[in-house]
Picture: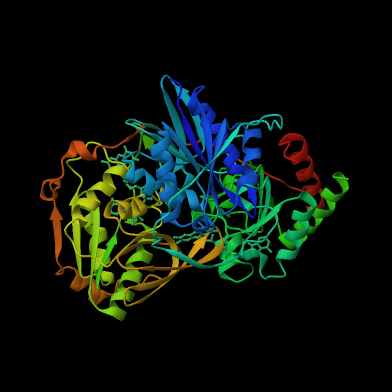
Length: 323
Length: 256
Ligand SMILES: Cc1cc2nc3c(=O)[nH]c(=O)nc-3n(C[C@H](O)[C@H](O)[C@H](O)COP(=O)(O)OP(=O)(O)OC[C@H]3O[C@@H](n4cnc5c(N)ncnc54)[C@H](O)[C@@H]3O)c2cc1C
Ligand SMILES: Cc1cc2nc3c(=O)[nH]c(=O)nc-3n(C[C@H](O)[C@H](O)[C@H](O)COP(=O)(O)OP(=O)(O)OC[C@H]3O[C@@H](n4cnc5c(N)ncnc54)[C@H](O)[C@@H]3O)c2cc1C
C-alpha cells in the first residue's frame, strides 16, 4: 500500500545535512511508491529546497519564521504539528540527530504513536516495513515494526545509502505560514565548539585518539594522518576528560555515534561506552601498545605498538601511495 | 521544591550478552541503575540541598527494581515509587511514558529529572514523551542547571556544541554525562534507605486500562551481530606492519 511520507530536512551552517538525503531514501522505501515530501524549517531556508529534489523528494514545504532560527522544541513542535494536521502523512522520518532525538518523542506522544529510534536498516515484509536498530550498546540488534498507526522512525546518520543525486529533478516548493505561539525554552546563546570541516557523524574516515595520545600535542600526528586521508579527527572520553581535546570530538554513547567506512583507533582501550559509538564502522583499525586491549576484539586489523611511532609512518606510507 | 526522578533499572551492558528465544537472556545478567539516571539522582539531591523540598524516585518495572530504588534512597532520595509493570503484556516507550503520565497527573511537581538515554534500549524517548503528556517544557542532554525562583538557566550538549537555555518551572530535563559526579551510597545512607518509604502501585491504582497503553511497536527479532572473525594482528618490524596495513586497507578492505 502506497504511503505518504514526511521527511524533516535538517541544515547546519547553511547546508543540508547528509542524513536528510538518507532520510529521503528511507522514506522512498517506506512509501512503497507513495509521495515523499520534505519539510524545511528555519528563518531562511528557501534556497536549500532544490537539493532535496535532487536526492529524491517529490515535494518540499518550507516554514520560515524568525522563531525558527534556532531549534526549540516548542517552535518546531508547533510547526510540525500544523503540517502533520494539514497533510496527514502515514509515515514520518527524522534523522537521529540531536534535534531529531529531542523532537520526535514529543511529537510521537502528541500523535499517540509508536516511534522506532536510531534505525540503521529497513526492509519490506509484506505490508510492513521492518526496521533494524542496535540495542545494548551495540552488542545486539533488534528488528521492529510499528504495529498500530503512524510509522514514525529516526535514522542513524551514515547507515542508509542516499539515492543517486540527480540534478535534473525538481518539484513544487510550497511555503507554509506558521503561527508560532510562546516558546517556553529560549536559546540564549550557542557556543560553537565542534570544529568546522568534516562533520564527525558523516565522515567516511575517522582517526580517533584516546588517553594514549598523552597530550594536546599528541593529537598532531593524528591530525596529519587525517589530513592525508581527508578524514575527521575524533576522540575517546578519556582524551576529552584529560583535556587533550574538546568534548565536541567525543565518540561513544555520550558523544557522537559514527559509522565511517574506516575507523582508526589510536591509544584507545575500547570501553563498551566507546564501542557503542563506533563498533558499527565498516573497517576498524586499532593501534595500541597493549595486546590485551579490548579494542582489538572489534578491530579488523591491529598493530600492537607505540602510536607515536606507528602513526607518522602510516602518514608517510599513505602519502606515497595516494599521490 | 517537589523534585522527581524517573529511573530505569537496566541491564549492565558491560557484561556479556546472549540471546535466547528472541530475547536478550536475563539469566546471570547484572542489573544497575541506568548510568545517566545516576546523574539525574545526584542533581536532584543537589537541588534539594540548595532549595529544600523532597526527592521522589519513580520507576515502572518489576519487583526486582526495588533494589535500584533502594540504592537511589541510599544516595539521598527521600522516597520511592515502584509502579508494577507485571500486568502488562507488551511495553514500549509509549506504554512507559503513558503509565508515568498517569502517575504524575495528580501530583505537584516542580522539576522531573531523567536520563538522556537508557543504555539497553537506547531510544531517549521517555523523557520528552512524558513532558508532552504533562504539557510542560523539556530540555534534553543537560550539563548544568541553575534555578532562581521559577527561572531556570541550563547548559546543554548539542552534538558537542554548548547551548545556553532559559526556561521556567515546572520542567522536565534529561541528564547528559558531565552534569555531575554521582555520589556512592554511604554506609549510613544504606542503613537509612531501608526505612525510607517505598510505595508500590499497580496499574489499577492509577486507573490505567492495559489496552489503552498497549505497545505501538513490536519487536520481531533480537539477534547478535554475526561473530566478527578475529581481526588480523600484524607482525614483523613496525615499518613492515605499516606497509602491510596500507596495502590491506587498499586491496583487501578496499576502503582507501
Ligand atoms: C555513563 C558513561 C558514559 C560514557 N560515555 C563514553 C563515551 O561516549 N565515549 C567514550 O570514549 N567513553 C565513554 N565513557 C568512558 C569509558 O568508560 C572509558 O573510561 C573511556 O572510553 C576510556 O578512554 P581511553 O580508551 O582513551 O582511555 P584508557 O582506557 O585509559 O585507554 C588508553 C589506551 O591507550 C593505550 N596506550 C597508551 N599509550 C600508548 C601509546 N604510546 N601507543 C599506543 N597505545 C597506547 C593503552 O594501552 C590503553 O589501552 C563513559 C563512561 C560512563 C560511565
Ligand atoms: C515485560 C516487558 C516487555 C517489554 N517489551 C518491549 C517491547 O515490546 N518493545 C520495546 O521497545 N521495549 C520493550 N520493553 C522495554 C521497555 O518498555 C523500554 O525499555 C522502556 O519503555 C523504556 O524505553 P527505553 O529503554 O528506550 O528508555 P529511554 O527512553 O532511552 O529512557 C530515557 C530515560 O527515561 C526514563 N525511563 C525509561 N524507562 C523508564 C521506566 N521504566 N521507569 C521510569 N523511568 C524510565 C529514565 O530516566 C531514562 O534514563 C519491555 C520491557 C518489559 C519489562
